[in-house]
Amino acid sequence: MRAIITGCLLLLATPALAQPALKPALAPLAFLVGDWDSGEGKVAETGGTSKGGSVFTVESDGAAILRRDHTELFGKDGKPAGGFHQTMLIYPDNGKLKADYVDGEGHAIHYTAVETVAGKSITFMGMNEAQDRGPTFKLTYDMKAPGTLAVSFGMTAPGGSEFRPIATGTLKRVP
Image (tube, rainbow, N blue to C red; front, top):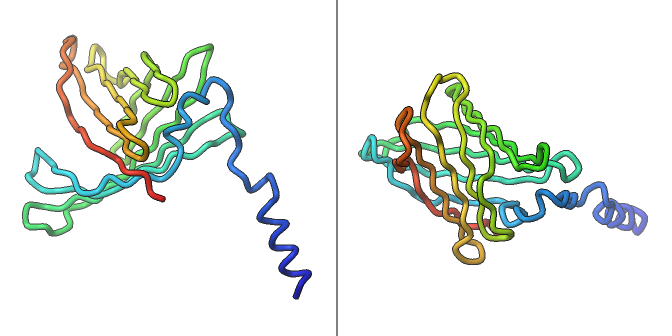
């Protein structure tokens, strides 16, 4: 029995099971890594609500951060109205931070980081390459307090320069 317990403890202490450290280019974004809960949000288009969360993990031996989201939608009556998944890979490329976003509806956005405050915030700007002269998207993560992350997503009209908010919310770190 003692051998089994010792073996289990050794497995828990094995470095292969530990989360790898982020590469220097991604280290300023370590504040994103973890599980986040969105709580209940409002869906302006339908008058309903949403619930979900995000998980940011260190991938590829610290060379990337992967964001996975799941959101459940509810109608005005509180009944389930569907849901969706989103994925975004954040990585350094030629000295710049970039991110590629996809969702289950076939949307893809290619982002470049435009402003980073180490340990505090990052703002991405991007376009959907399939749309000629399409809208520009802006995605910001801003650590408001320990364990509280503000998220905002907006877009311009095609050829425009003023951002219109699409979604804003607050994520709470899951202990």
